[in-house]
Length: 434
View (tube, rainbow, N blue to C red):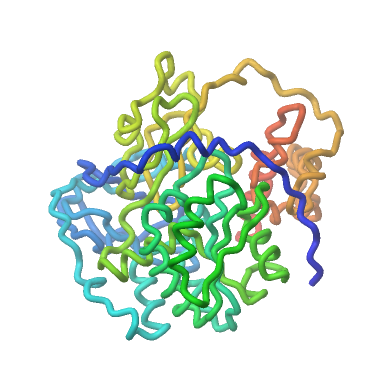
């Protein structure tokens, strides 16, 4: 299959805002909240009044690739509530009240990864409920359980979205643990070639200098251009392996994992602690002191925000643009009252400078199609969505959209094409499932 040259664009990073200070910690929330509906329906195993340990199974996903959801704290299930999820949707959630004892299940204690087989490592990965922490939330064990030959494992440290520095911070402050985890991801893949993909830019020099002396002989660092969307899985695979694929990277002999996923796997093997914390960037020009935080999964964002001095004077949730995730692919939120998840990388608070700027009619300039890395025509998709033409949307290959946000970013008329194309993709996929 021929590799097509992907359209890319340099975008201002604004990453310096959040890397000036060491990460903070938010590891003792009074309550955590675990969704029972999102991102997929769950079989709930615990009821109000039940005591749980850190790492105990509290629900099981019913998706195509089932995985357990574990409690990030020890304590008691005290309520079933509705709260906001970072996708700007409400979800039923279990409220767990912290007993602050951090009593942990024995499942992951005293592991000896040097003497574990590949299958045993993958099974531990499955039992931990580890999902890809770069945004997609795909169960990690599924990638590594492949029957195909794996030529290389790529750890994605590109972090190409503006503002976000959670992966950078995770690796910078835990370099040895990160490499430890990488070592056993390679073993789980039965692979002897590991690559860390990171952007070639000045702010990454420090983390590269930390990592290079720690690399095993079968590991190396590959520099990507400072462009968007360099962190997109296809771009990374094609740039490094010089191969392409139709659906999944394994077709090119490659497994791609996020840097934070690697770190969580390492903590589990090294410390006996399943995924229960996540590095998170709190940033934006409306925040007093942007930075990063290591927070318990399920922690409410309003309780974390004061660690960064809260919002600047004159700002409140009503007059601030709040984004869960990156500014290109994240979700605009009505309120900051949502929770930390395994896949949430950032919460961005921006001065709402464009609130009075209106959307204009399409100019027919073609920039959206010119810059689409999936080679789509977003404005045509928007037109067909408006009339509900499903068959035409299929012909326009809408399901190939990666929702990178570039079409909206380059549109001179400020048309929210990303939203329209994403909605069209969701519609076609939903009808396909039916």
